Amino acid sequence: MLNVNNLTKKAGNGEILKNLSFIAKRSEITAVIGPSGSGKTTLLRCLAQLTPISSGNVQFSGQDLKELSHGEIGLVFQNFHLFPHLTILENLILAPTSHGIQKEIAVQKAHQVLKQFSLGGKEKRFPSEISGGQKQRVAIARALMLDPPLILFDEPTSALDPEMVKEVGEIISSLQDSKRVIILVTHEVRLAQRIASRVLFLDHGILLDNVESAEFFSTDSTKLSKRAQRFLSNLS
Image 1 (cartoon, helix red, strand yellow):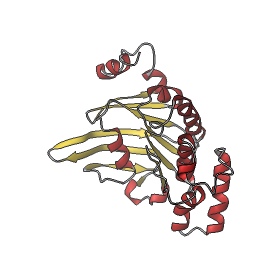
Image 2 (tube, helix red, strand yellow):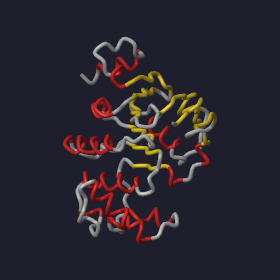
Image 3 (cartoon, helix red, strand yellow):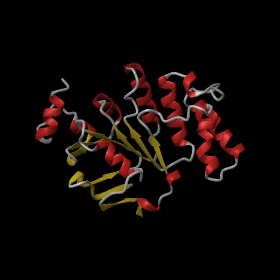
Image 4 (cartoon, rainbow, N blue to C red):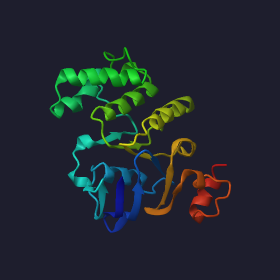
């Protein structure tokens, strides 16, 4: 379980995130949505330990998040961030071998994960030689190489066409596991509706809504914040 308590992120004289508190459970997908500039990606960067929080604390299974190694947090970037000079296989085994895992074991795991995502036979290809949807699948496969208990997705479908959005959504959904917490930041509201268990709605760095997905996308949205109601009305 991921427990976020009064997380605040300051920038200059202002606050990007303001006293955020929520719980993300294992076996669930927690989607973070909201208008541009609401602090979604900043929240993810804080959870990925790419940027320090200003105050508050985050615990994962009772342990301070700062005590987790980077190998225990999988991050899938918006624009893939694959190394262009490395083959698909080399991209996947880089982190495991850097963490002391024998190359032979890492290669075996890479083949298994690539096969799982229908990427078998692409091991010797370079990122420039595969499609956008395949690149995102490789990015997800890379994030799984160390079996992290916490996986963070930062707008994983933003560079994909609608057909690929559905495919990647199905892959993310398939990753739900009793040992894993999944946080999904997305502007694809329909994707969140399809695969999320819980929805966090942010606006100007404030957590306005924290409800089950079915409640957030209910035809009766009067229980939501006025800002979330307006946000959803603009989508119809």
